[in-house]
Length: 273
View 1 (tube, rainbow, N blue to C red):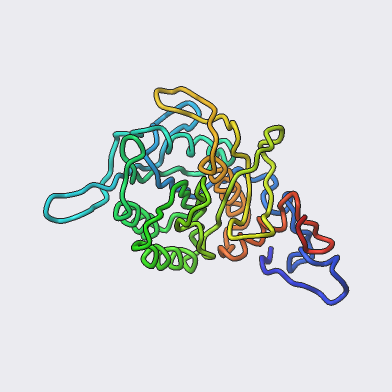
View 2: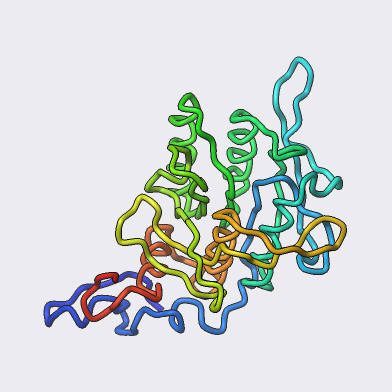
C-alpha cells in the first residue's frame, strides 16, 4: 500500500485520500492494529516491571552520574522511583497492547531531574532507533533548547516519532514546542477515553483525554490522575498502532495520519472545527 498523500484537482472532497485512493481515517490509519512489533520507549521515571496493567518490559535503562566521567546510560532492574513512568506505560499498553515497551529513567524521586539527564536519556534513545519515544516531561531552561532542538530534528529525519507533553501551565518549555515532535495537551472530555482532537491553533498539535485518567501506579496499584502527561501516551500508543500497520511511514506522514483521523477534522474541507 502506498503511503504518500495526494491532493487531486477535482475539489476539496479528495483531501485526505491516500495515493492508492483509500480514505485516510481511523479505520485506514490503525484499524485492526495492536502495535505489534513497534518499539516504544518511555523516557521518564522508570517503569515498574510486570505491573499487571503494563506487562513485561523488553528493556530498561537508567541515566547515571559516574564520578569523574559524567553521565552514562546503564541497564537497570530497579523499576520506577515515583510512579509517573509506570502510569504513562500503562496507557501505552492499553492503547497498543502488542507493542514492545522500553524504559529509560531520567527522573528521580519526587520527579527530580536535570536538563543534562533529559538530554542524555533522549540522545541514547534516539541512538537505539526506537520507533516512538514518549516524553511526558519538558524543561523550561533556555540553555538546553538548541541541543534539544538538534536531537528532535535528528529523530524526525531518522523516522523516530517523539511524542511530547505540553507543559501543564502556560509557560515556555521544550521539546514540545518544536515542529519536529508530535506535541500533546489534554482535553476534559471523560465520557470517551479514545477521543482525540487536532488543535487548529498550535503550537500544541493534539488534545487527548487527560482528566481523571485511570493509570497504573507503584506496587501493582492503580489510581486516577490528571494532566498532559497522561494524554501524551495515548497518542504514543496510536502512533505505535499506525506504524505497525504502515511501517514505512515517515514522521511527517504519521502526523498527517493523526491529523486526518482526528475527531474534529472534516475531510470534506480539510479543516478543523
